[in-house]
Image 1: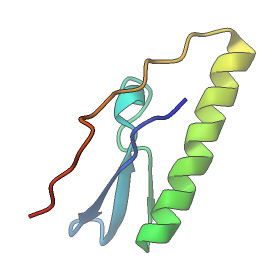
Image 2: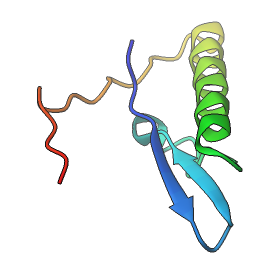
Image 3: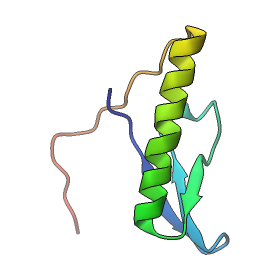
Image 4: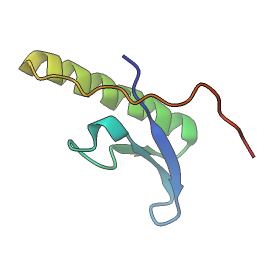
Length: 74
């Protein structure tokens, strides 16, 4: 399954803050990192733990969000 990972810089926190939109009901924001790469790594670890926990508890996973087939960068 493919889930969205949103990474944004936070001036207030002075780090990259990560959200997992499909798991908003669990926690928001999910994790953070001092670098973009660290934030992504932490997000992947949290996502793996959330999926593992849902499987162990027999809970259904949220449906992954889908986005358009093309992105335009300004």
